[in-house]
Amino acid sequence: MRATLADEIVPPGPGPGAGASPRDRLLGVADELFYKRGIHAVGIDAVIAAAGVAKMSLYRSFPSKDELVAAYLARRSGLYWDWWNRVVARHPGDPRQQLLALTASLRKRALRAGWRGCPFTNAACEFPEPDHPGRRVAESNKRTMRRRFRALAKTAGARSPSRLADQLTLLFEGVYATVLTFGHRGPARAAIDAAAAMIDAQLPKTRGRALRRSRRRGAR
Image 1 (cartoon, rainbow, N blue to C red):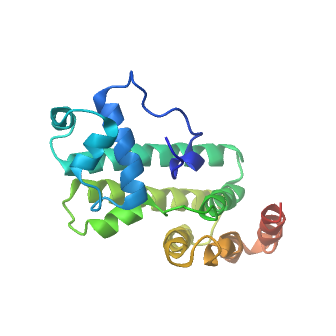
Image 2 (cartoon, rainbow, N blue to C red):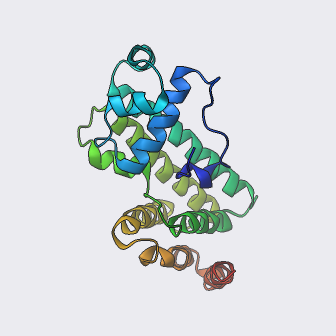
């Protein structure tokens, strides 16, 4: 399978092979095509053809395209939290550095050519209907991200954990959006400095240290 957003979240592994179930093959193909081309642009017939399964196999696994979209996004969400947990685990007991490390990891992925941004943000744009199964998965991912930012900000001793969480959420969403419009050489390169400034504003006793550390890491 070709590289996708998941490459940075989990190490790339072999795609569904001949021994994979029809469901796994369909989901693997949908993951690649939906992310690369957009969900509305990819028809069911294209997914079936690329997966090499019978049409009936798709409807046995996913009663509708909407259900396939929801499964694709649920899979991506699981990968996303695996990535988050691994990054945070590299800095035990240091929530401030955990926040910076999450931003640095996102920036690294965003600056790679061909990145298509956040699958959840993209899906929310494609499906404005609040009751769409895919949109519900996307919204759940975003709400969880905001809560996790708030928990880290609170542990770090931020004056207003909710405010810092909202600022970091906006920063992440800004990275996702600007990469699609400006490309990998655009404003996303400033993400680490922006995160450090936000964190320092909430933690005045450590002002400057986060920014200096982030710049050293960004220069490597």
